[in-house]
Image 1 (cartoon, rainbow, N blue to C red):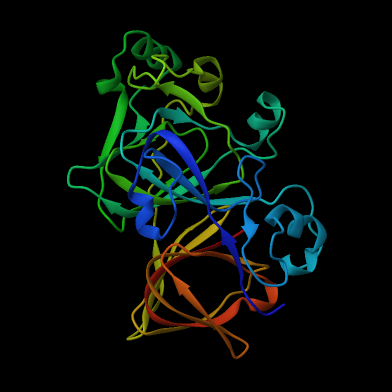
Image 2 (cartoon, rainbow, N blue to C red):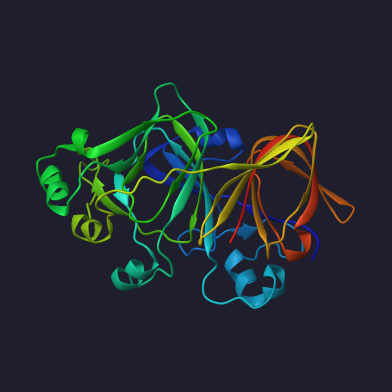
Length: 316
């Protein structure tokens, strides 16, 4: 199959969400819309094909019944999940398990959760929490018990275009005033460590998961320095490899006029984060605009993009 498969976005309400996802062309379900699950086969937010031969089918159905789209035999669960997040308020301070820990601690998750963030937009003064200062489990526990968050948590100022790799076991939180695209393993397991003592509409604090968090948190913290690599730069485009791990490889493409692309991959996940253009595969062209999320099957991983746009591309 030499054509793209476009998905309908799944919008998720969150206590920290806002209304900025409307700028991607989405109809928001509430004033606290925090997440767009753009490409997902996870049971908590299945992507549905919006048009064409597979209209109405889910990504999970395609993974299970049409393995030829993904380069051959598929097994287990589809491995990746792509989101856009609007953090109108701070997210909780949290941590995720790795694959082995998720298998031991959770009944319904096939994967742990290593993730990465591309900052689409950030207000002046925006920041992330990434990592902590404790050198021992005892020191970490003591600071948590004493609510010494300012000295425990590592804060990082951010701006549009920044990129962060967040392996499982890393204490983290996305700060207010930030829009990011997140590429992650297909998991919805989050262990909250701290939630700024806020309450929901009924006055209840959200549940914390300190016992599980302590089992999976990396102590002492390992600071991962992401080394991005420019792989194409010419008058037409700049393409940067943001990260390559066991879980995923992620690229950022800034198309100024054209990009002739060829990937050696079983499939590609593509999200348009800015602008608009035309995607051409095997002499057939398709309009793509900011907010689109699509799958390129194995026979469609050689393509051309024309226009002025930015996109995030990923594969396993």
